[in-house]
Length: 234
Image (cartoon, rainbow, N blue to C red; front, side):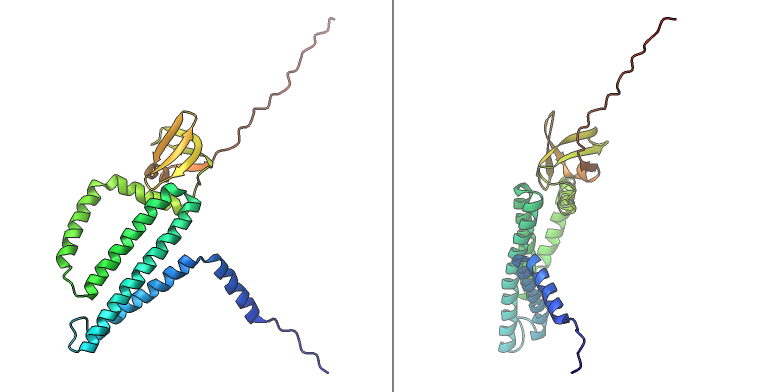
């Protein structure tokens, strides 16, 4: 009876890889991706029915249904994305950054869903967009420094050069030289550093432009043994 060569089961390895990926991907992240895909699909399918002012009743009802479905899935995607972002920020920066980051994600997501829904329901949003653009430009100029710190905080949050509880050394000319201390909290605007001189709230914009690294262990200088000179009488 001829022996058949052993052929590795590729399907088993593929299933193992899928299980490994599935174990690392959180449910909130999967839910956010699925709901976002469904929301964008409904948004793209809405113009096919001719909008809410279509000629026939069935097309108008279909347009209203796709718009309502977009709102439902868009809100679900926003909430799931905010929950996943909160989980990541809690592990990397603590509650000081997780709470405002969740609020910001919810506000941005709700705003996008509201504007898109107004367009799907054929509501006049032209004047609202123009007024919002002018207001946003004025607020952006007025809060330029604060927005710079916020974006720097987001970059530091995902780059993760340090975590709360870590002893770090910061070298920056803007901060007056070298600072040594322990990171106590990481926020969207400031990072709190506990030093020998007290607690410092350092703007994230300054930290993004600084050199940050772990604080080296204190090393005691090694003392060389002193040599005694012995003079002998001739």
